[in-house]
Length: 440
Image 1 (cartoon, rainbow, N blue to C red):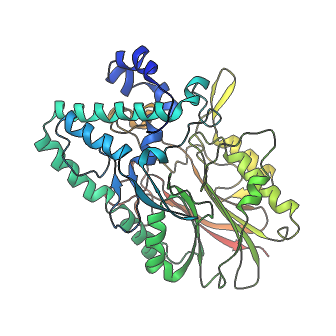
Image 2: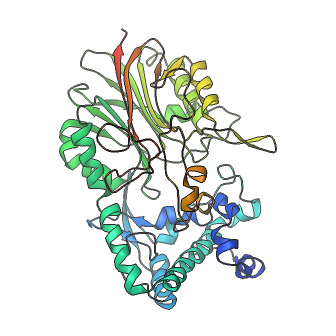
Image 3: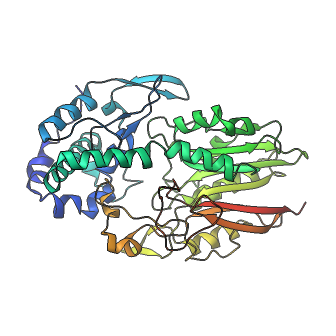
């Protein structure tokens, strides 16, 4: 039905012979190739039209609530979900109806260099197979180390607190704690979140701007929110296309639809702004070229040259440099600092970011598909994602930083060495806030 190339040779020559834990679940290379995590990203939880509840893939690691007490029960439901049931989702072009397997996206070697060219050519069926292997191992593992009567009710309790309340909790935090902000930039935002924000108290106070190339399949979009008192007319125009057109011609920039959202707006005093939100790729390798393209867009377009810049981003930068065979594997934060100052910008952290000024502190168990990021509980500081990732940039001289803080509690303060999200704080990135004084 899918019309895909046969990948049974991969199963026969490789995967069927692997040990499920040491050679699949703990395979760092498999994680780097995204062969299990990419299908999970697309199909884990799908927000559908005309329903308050999303549709979930039959797996241990999401809000799926039906019985998974045996592999036979799981497989029938999994196969039907992937290949039989068409779902209607919202896109910028309108509603589209697809089966989950039709939503999957190719894994590109340019963005995920660990994947081979042979694997890239068959990445759709190969990731589907690996996703099924991953889900089946989880079901087998849970029913082996526990019993369905114990782990399934426990899962429902966790889902109620950490998943179903995540969007309402986040919306409440933004409205009640940061609702007086002039500008809010968000990353990895779902279309459902955007709809709920527009329909609630935030929508009354803010212009909520989603990118016009919003990706309803990945459903991870960068958003710019403008306080209606500060920006009475809201967005003037979106200039994301101009930024993309300014990418360095010799660089393959690993960005996806919805990652960049750049708009113009005029404040109540008549001052024009470019305001951008950006979500960097996992390795942070898109961050420098995207920032360069944003600056060049403003410089080469006479209509933008007098605009003030505010750029909020998850830069996905790292505390330490990581180079393999002379090739940079992820973006080290000090190099990022040297780059943005080279373009006449500074940040809420100043010209030189502090590598140990972490805005993430989370670690992944093996009950998730990015296997290269999984670690034991005793290793969460050493092997977790504990890095200085989040920034607010602006042109040097335009503003003076009066105060900057990070928040992993939802109460405007940060607890160092505490893993998050927590039951009280819904995000795996800290809130980053800054108060700027105008110098114009």
